[in-house]
Image 1 (cartoon, helix red, strand yellow):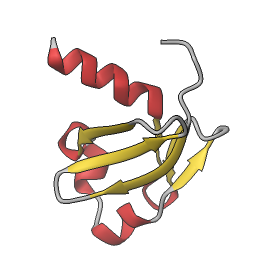
Image 2: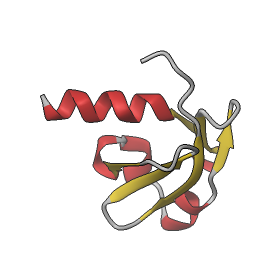
Image 3: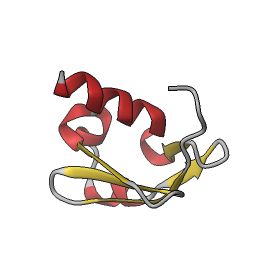
Amino acid sequence: MNGLIKGKEVHFDDEYLHVKLEDGRIISTPIEWYEPLKQASISELKIINLICMNTGIEWESIDYHLKIESMLELSLKNVA
């Protein structure tokens, strides 16, 4: 994947990280896949910033950055 996959909204529930893309699609991946997120508190998870022209997500309080494209790559890898 080499296009710019841009996020519009980010939220999570008890099990999944959800990202709504600018084109309307939604990517959902298990929080279990991301050790820093799994270890973070609910209050830390709630403080989210879209970064790098909305192609990444930052949790500044836990110093964790996630490229939205990598969520798709992980999804494809875990399906195969």
